[in-house]
Image (cartoon, rainbow, N blue to C red; front, side, top):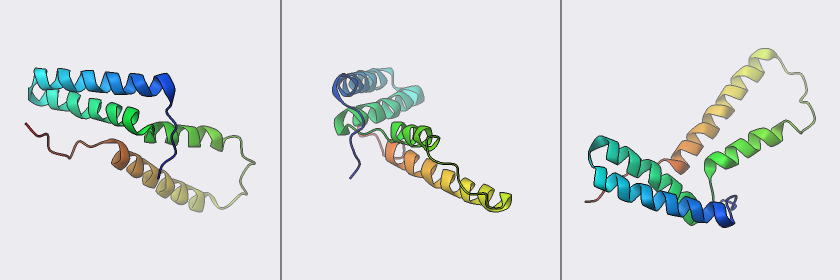
Length: 106
């Protein structure tokens, strides 16, 4: 289970803005409306669950600078491992926060 990193007013605002955005997207219709619904659903989910995967990822990267400097492995190893790690984290963030593949029910 994910820890809550969105609380209080931020959580309520996310829920309110997400709900209003979904209603607006339904009224708008078309492809633009579907995109608005998808983005708004992510914002509403953030408010409902109290967890934002993107915020978690950004906090992890920001906190990473406070740690002691890493040892000096070879440049090739560092680059490859870093790319794989970054790709895995971004893929996980996208899976957790972007429900665009879910069909919209009428």
